[in-house]
Length: 433
Ligand code: ATP
Image 1 (cartoon, helix red, strand yellow):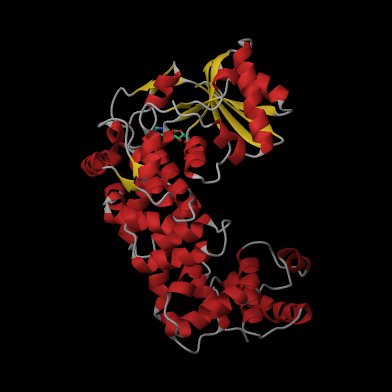
Image 2: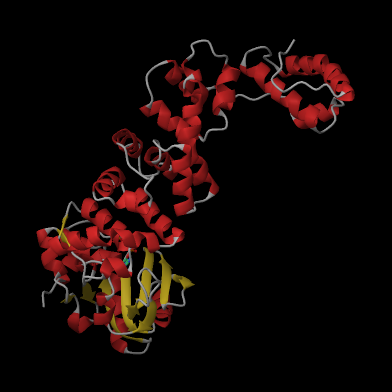
């Protein structure tokens, strides 16, 4: 059994090593609901690969939440969440610590949520997705740093291989298909031959996933800095098409996504959604939305590409007024417009988009609804019309101050009121005298 104590001590921040030693001591004392305590999953993998490990995940045999409360007290942290599956989160001065009860999982049917039973450490590693994620480092003092590696994850780390633990792994949980390609690209690994074959064979199982699980996994993918490369690979492997025949990653969409990503990790997720869905027609957008059931913001962005295409040719005209541009673009999500700014042609369209994003979209009238009410404007359609006209007048430079706006209101109000009385109302946006 390889001993990785020196790796633990040299690669982790001192406070984290201290915390892990405390966890090991607590387990060894046998008083706090735990027999064994291990560091598991991604942080063990990253330590071995020389990558910076993320927040530590600890697994204990026994009672995870009880152990978490004892550990939280020792490290001056607080247990912020406990789940029915025996997991707990500690918020500590050193960051977040996840504590879980070692468990086994059985799948009643493909893609169903697993049934969970507290179990041994071996069973806990057996339920995991890939060999490189199925390693654990012992934390008790007498076994500190011993590597538990029943699936040869260490060797797969060295060979750069993503490998499932058993042939039906992707069928049990098809989210692992997306996880596989995410790790493969993130770590610059390849698939083991059997894993590649199983992945291709089991693509149809993606259909069985609920929308919410699929969407959650897609969001994890979009959060990766190498998201565009992952999507490129997912496209090649047929994963996107298996999610929805309408979903496809185009090279222009991915290139733009890379440009957005280069601006930093805080990039708005919706910019990536706009890039991924930039080629969809209305019908394709509907199909993707039906499969993923995302929130309204995502839906608007997914539909945005088709909405933009409807106005794109008009935007090619050189002599549009600012109000025309606003009229064309204001119902389209800003992320879709940002996408077009980068990916679209460098023509009048680009000039209008840039002017819209920089100036027009920020312009509004000084006069508010309350001001209009003070001028005797009844709340209702007439007030809405006047506010719209004021905004247009501001945009097109016909008024330049609050005073001029109020002048305009005084000029327009009698006509609007009399039209309303006669029931001969004109549509909004009518010429302003
Ligand atoms: P990283 O993305 O760097 O791996 P992480 O390790 O925190 O970060 P999580 O998605 O939180 O990743 O998963 C934690 C561990 O849980 C994984 O290392 C893996 O062992 C296991 N795991 C997560 N999801 C699955 C799954 N669908 N099937 C089997 N095991 C899983």
